[in-house]
Image (cartoon, rainbow, N blue to C red; front, side):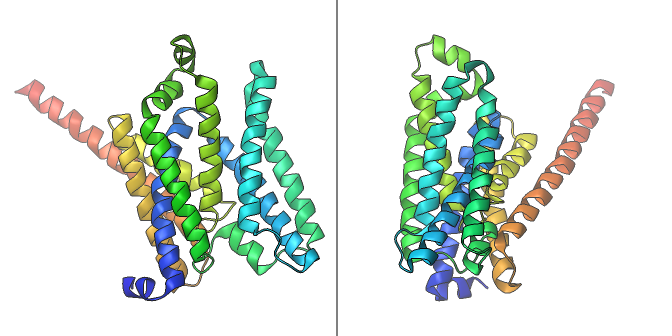
Length: 288
C-alpha cells in the first residue's frame, strides 16, 4: 500500500503534501479556534475558489497559461485576508461583520467566473474536493515553502499569538503590537488555505483546520497538548483520506473530513470514559 505511494512521483508529491498540510492546518487551527475565528477559514476558502475559477477562466479564454489557478487562488486568498483586516478596522464595534462580507463576495465571484468558464470542469472539481493526482512538483515546492514560513512564524511569535488569542485586551494594554501580529496571522491563514486546497479541496479545507482541534480540546489538559493532539488527529485524517482516495477512487477531501468527524466522536467517548474513571477512583478513595 505504502509502496505505491513511494513508487510513483505524483503519489509521492501527494503524500508529502498531505503530511505537511496535516501538520500546519491543525497547528494554525488551534489559534483560530481559541480566537473564535473559525469562519475566517470558510470565508478565505470561498475567495480562494474565486481565484481558482478566475485562473481557469483565463486559461480557457486566452488559450495560454497566463497564471496557474493555484497561484490565482493563492493571490485571491492573500488579498481577501488583507480586506478582512481592513474591514475589521473600519467596523471596530462590529468586527465580525467583515467575515460574511468577504465570504459572500467570494461566493459571488466564484459563481460569475465559473459561469463565464461554461461551468464545472474536471480541474475545478479536483480543486473543490481534492485529488490524489493533482499535486505537481512545483505545487509541492510552494507548499514546502509555505509550511516553513508557518512553522517559523509560529515558532518566533508563539507567546505573542498565545496572549493575543486568549486575552486580546490584555495584549493591547501590555504594549503588544496586536495589529501587526493579527495581520501576520491572517496572512498565515490565507497561505495555509491556499496550500491545502490540492489535498482537501476548497469546500472542505476549513474542516481540517477546526475538527481535529475540536477533538483535541476534549482530551487535552493544556494548549500545547491540544496542539500535539490536533496535529496527530490531522495527520491521521489526511493519511487515511489519501489512501482511501487512491484505492477507492474517491475524492480524498470528503474522506479526510469524515475521518476527522469520527475521531471527534471517539474523543467524546474517550472523554466520558476518563471522567467516569476519575469519579470511580475518587469514590473508592473516599470510601477507603
